[in-house]
Length: 578
Image 1 (cartoon, rainbow, N blue to C red):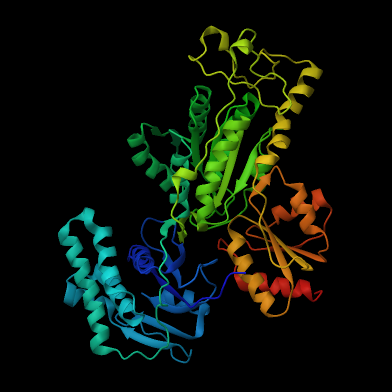
Image 2 (image 1 turned 90 degrees about the vertical axis):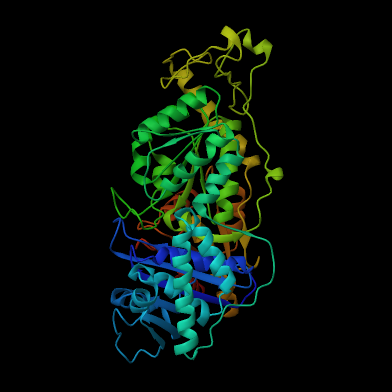
């Protein structure tokens, strides 16, 4: 179990366009610069401007598993933020609010600090829009955020907009800081934890995927903008050309995957990123990649669906689509990231599996993890090992069989232009023989299907075992996937404090399933709990069918991450037979 540390959970709430997100990001950067651990969560509306926005950061002296269920501090920019978020503010928590905007009702028991943020911004900075930086100064003074770190974070964030903008924001920071010095007497016990110095880098999930794509040697990326995957494409469009690569914005998701298929056929490592609606459009071409045995990686950053759904909210509802989409039976690998570090390492793994086993790999994340910032160990690129495609030998080229039957299902793959006329073949979506020539014989289809699926059996030895947390003699087992891992692990620790023996298995590989570790974990467990961020309990459905278990389902379908307290309650009920 993770050690318990001293932590502080701060949430900033207001209207989109008021600088809510930038305020939270600057707090995060300053805390990280002070060598503290951070974990964040944000929500914002689908509209460009207007609608409720929120940024939450948990700050600790020890590594964090989760962004926190409840708040120590709420900074409310308006009445709506107060109404939306006070239910999650602890009874002895701190409410800081813009008294120029609203006055909250009495009687809630919170420690209150009324600060006229808007008036201060207008009168002392000259811009009402600077109230978020005034708020940053207020929070910095109240909770002992390092002032120099805040200044440096502001300067770095706004330097591209010119020195005048930087100075205006620094002035607003000082206005808020000085206001607390003059007008407010601290009445709460909260302050930033003392740092234990340790080098780390702070990045968000999508940024880690971007780094993983480049570290994996991918130099061809194409996609169509879609929330919450767009920033991966945007960052790669900026960085790949510096590495000699190509990034293209396609006219739609079908064109994006078609381009990836062509690039893969030509010998490039290829990548595209999307979310649910775009992933749906890719289905037919995904089947072509599987049938033609062409390696590529698709990142699906899940959002709440179906259809357009809730573009800026989180969900884990694409699992069935990732596992079973498309007509016929098309083998694919499905990986799911659990944290920001995973977003890097599993991206590299996705490319290695795709290239070695010549098939498409789906890398799953979700909206909450895509924007979650965490402090992770600095990435050591010297430790990244890359797999390469199996190439034909000169002898094999004399009678080149692109789809030769092999023990592993992997056949030598020629690259056009590298092997002369001998290595020429057609990558077809139609059933074919070993040479790639169309063939409709029953025996051919049977053996080719077996060949394609043998790859999934062969790769099991290359897959990292799923981590297990908790005591070996636990009677309650929790099985999770994706970004629920942190909440599950934190709930296990709280359950242990209450005398409940519970353990967890967290799946990062959803296809092929690793039967050995899963069956070993199930052995001896009286109850199995499966928490998921979807309505139907999609992983529970899969495991029930495959392992004949009757799991307890905790299905949260609200466009938000599962809370630690929800998992803890379900563990307690399972332990006591309720």
